[in-house]
Amino acid sequence: MPDGATPDTIANLRRDLAAAYRLIALNGMDDSIYTHISARMPDGPGGEKRFLLNPFGLRFDEVTAENLVTVDETGAVVDDPYGAGVNAAGFTIHSAVHMARHDAVCVLHTHTVAGVAVSSIKEGLLPLNQWSAQFHGRIAFHDYEGIALNLEERERIVADLGDKRVMLLRNHGTLLLGRSVAEAVKLALNLERSCKAQVAALGMGLTPVVLSDEVAEHTARQYDKAYDSQEVAGKPDPEWDAFLRRLDVVAPDYRG
Image (cartoon, rainbow, N blue to C red; front, side):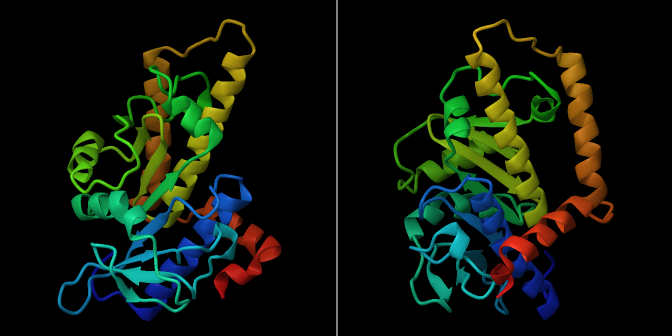
């Protein structure tokens, strides 16, 4: 996001981030009051790095555009409309990724049953279908080191992530980077259903049909082209618009 963004741009960012929290909750991908979705704001007047985060203690289905907290790169509170502060330790991973990857407007971290299950097997996500093929060769891995409170681990996470936008945190969960909030959410939803499909397919006890590297890579490039058409070429995003319309019906207070 460019410096000097207009108030409307910031308002839209807050709306989109609140929508992300609601959509993750609506799809059963939240984990009580834990995990985070962060968004990078325009730099402050003195070049300060600023990010939006959920107030600590609120469920994802309670997050609104108005109660999001502004923090700096250390997780220190800059603006806190709700007054509950943030889980600064939970921002450890996010701050490291945001500071290293300036292309990441949004960083989304989940602990879902399917995501944790797939992160806990050596093979990770297999190209078993069209959903999972989009991630072929595009997933980074980071070995589990315990609850992510160690600041030194941040450098290892960033190094393992490299230039990828999707990471399986071994034995832990998933991490998604989006050039917009919309992209991060779409990646998260697609990864989640890919993991669910893998758990279901392997759970049948039959022989899975794994796509060839050639077909999986071709499919992944097709997905890349679709994402780039919106994030690089600036084409409309009808899927994100559809998500927002859904929230306007089932959870209209997210905008407030």
